[in-house]
Structure formats: C-alpha cells, structure tokens
Amino acid sequence: MKQRIRDSGPLPARGVSRRKMLQSSAAALAAIGFAPMLAGVSHAQSFPSGPVTIVVPFPPGGQADTLTRVIAIEMAANLGQPVIVDNRGGAGGAIGTASVVKARPDGYTLAYSSSGTVVVLPLTNAKLGYDPEKDLTPIGQMFEIPLLLVARKGFGPSNVQELVAAAKAAPGKFSIGNTGVGGLAHLVAEYVRTTMGVDFLHVPYRGDGPLQIALVGGELDLGVVAIQTAAPFVTSGEMKPIALLGAERLPSMQGVPTLAEAGYPGFAAGTFGGLHAPAGTPQPVITRLSEAMSAAVAKPAVRERILKNSCVPVGSSPAAYGKRLDAERKLWGGIISRLGIKLE
Figure (tube, rainbow, N blue to C red):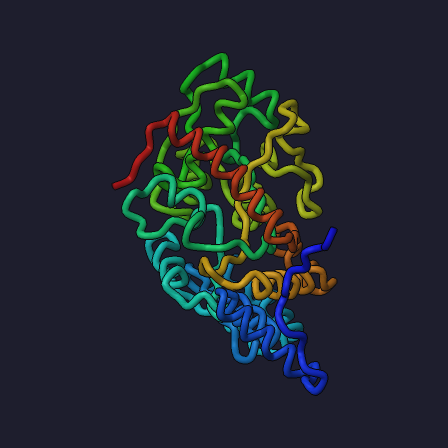
C-alpha cells in the first residue's frame, strides 16, 4: 500500500541565513497580531529611559510625602533615572489620583495610593470619576501606617478590658471622634465598636487637627489617630493610649498592646502607602518598578526612616498588594453597606 505524503512546501534554500529566517519569523508574528506584545517587550527592555514621576495626591510635608521621597531617592539609584515626587492635593486625594488614571500607561507616571484613594473613596463616592480596580494597576505596598485608639487625659478606663466593661455598663455614654462620615477613621471606629460589642457616640470633626484639639481639650473621650500624630501627645500625657489597631506592636510603643492581644484575635486595621500605575502598563514594566521599590524599602537606612515615622516597612509584590486591596474592599465595603454611607 502506498503511503500518502503531505506536501509541506519547498524547503528553504541553503543560502538563506539564520538572521533572515528570524527576521521573517518576526514579521510573520507581527502580521498575526503579536505586534503589541513585541512592542511591550521592547519598551520594558529599555525602561526607564527618562524620569519617573510619583504623584502624591496630598500636600507636601505630610507622612505620605516624606516617606515617598525617601523611597524615591533609592528607587532612582536602582532605576538609573530620576524619580520625581509631584504633590497634587485636593478632594481627599481624588484629584491627584485621577490625573494618574489619565496618564499614558508607560510606567513614567505613578500614583501614591492609600486606603482612602483606592478603597474608601471609590466605595463611598459615586461621582469619583475613576475606578481603581479597572483604571489602575498595583505595583506594591511600600509601608503600613498603623492606627492607635487613644483616650483623653483623665479618662477613667486605661486598657481595653476596662473600656469594654465601662462602655457596656453605660451604652452610648462615651464619645469617639472621627475625621468625617465615611472616612477611614469613622470606619475603623465602627469596626472597633462592633468588635468590642459596645455602643459609642460618634462625633465627626473636620480633619485631624480639630479632632486632636477636642481630645487634648477634654471634650472628646476617644479617637482613632495615626501613631505619628498621637505620639507627642502620648509622651506629654495629654492623650492616653488604649490599644494599637494594627497586627503587631511597634518599637515606639512597646508597652501598648494590640487589640488582638487584648482579647480580640484577628483584629487588624490601618492604612498604608503603596504605588499604582495606569491600567494597561506593560507587565514587565510593573515588575521592574515593583522590584525597584522593594529594593529601596529593604535598604537599612530606609527601613530606619520608616520606623522612625511610626510606620512599618513592607515592600510587597504587585500580587500581594492586590490581595491586600481585595481584603480591604471586602472589610470596609461591608461596614459601609451596614452603615448606609453614600456620598453624592
């Protein structure tokens, strides 16, 4: 029986060089739709070829701005190009973040991201103008900003157990301040309240400054504040620390237990500083930026600066940061839904 042999076409001539064959293959790939992929790889290999800008959507001089600048210096050394910090404050961070959403997805314009800008604001503001899950890509978390539950000077209870007992004996008697309805401090205070199983009187203030004044002045019983903000008042005795709200103790407040240690295992709440890029940024570029950021955070001098600012160094991968963001959206989304918060 004769075998039927399929004709696969003429063999390449012996004189055809390897280079020409590769060029022909590349042309064929481009012709069938691989051009964008090849362009992305080429861009990533040459990235960065110019300055990278990190937009911090808050005024200069704050904790986010200070630590981002420290990390940016080391990122620049790693990338071989300047890394510029550009402050574009306003609308709780929404203005600066929205400007990055509109930037070219090439890795040269990044956003400093926090729980407010990429979690809470999108959950509470229907007219925000951007959706971080669709419009931004996570690069990594730089550091954690722990929060502290504090009380005014002269407040009776001195620890979590005493506070819970007193609050259960007099529901709604104690006031707890926040920096505005729907803000992170409000949500964390509600999380603390429901975890403890007590009732507090929520009192909104227009920012951290007025809340601090109310605590120091004795018109407010309790507050949820960043540790860096509270530290001077705790040292002077004008505020009394009740519990750290993060997952672990801090060197600057070793004597203060976490809420988890005080009888509520698994409790952890705080904010963070990370980096995002516009959606569509090539994955190799995201990886390069993440590696540069993580290497910067790992530097002993940078870690020391972060810890001195009452924060915790992290330096996570895009995947780890994305997982953290998903958990935050689930946690705060549930509390926002229960409270019926919606800002138009």
